[in-house]
Length: 104
Image 1 (cartoon, rainbow, N blue to C red):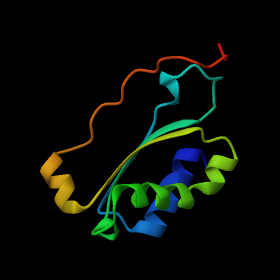
Image 2: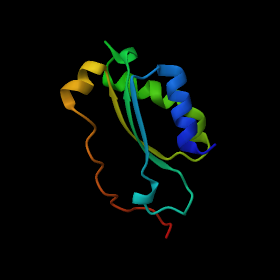
Image 3: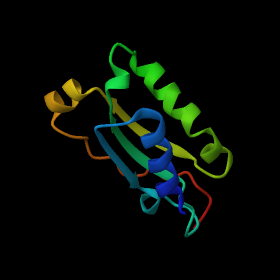
């Protein structure tokens, strides 16, 4: 099972999202091939209702703690309630990588 599949499985198990997008954006960064190190998440779940954004992000960081320990480097997180999801109409595009890695 690759990292994307593990992330999807863990988030589905913990948050029962009504919508989940897990996008591997590693290709946008200067890292060795096969790194699976940069992901964008869109998680739409009722469990976020009444929870501040910072606490939603902390929750995902905790759920994915093992992934960070084994090579996950960065997450772009969009953590919305169903109401927020419908109001926004989707996730924004990620900006291009600005570099900074010594890989290459």
